[in-house]
Length: 141
Image 1 (tube, rainbow, N blue to C red):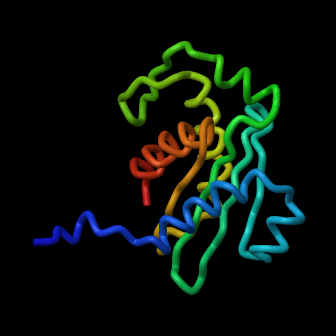
Image 2 (cartoon, rainbow, N blue to C red; image 1 turned 90 degrees about the horizontal axis):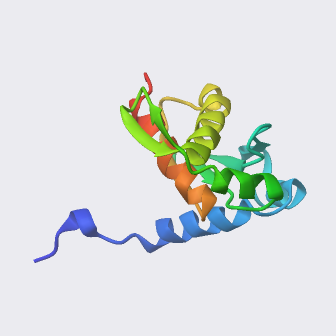
């Protein structure tokens, strides 16, 4: 007996991994691969970089968050004070939370509420992606 809720979709897993790697690239390389469907931004405070790719064919918006890449990111990792996020009613590593809120504020206005969202990240980007996922799940549609 197979439980379909645990079905592994390798193509989708490959896409998560490919985008988690792509966000480490330069903007020119990302645009060459993803064209106009890609938007690359970096937080002014955290210097965490994220990539949003709109896959019109699949009606999916992919968000990838880059991991530790520069000295500012190292400081974000080290900001280990615990902070409460009121919307979620939860406590988080304050550096990760600050970077996630910065990404959320920048990304949300550009999202299409009719499309699914998939989020990935590595290292610092994985932590930010997890908090960003929670923030997006709690945001008004």
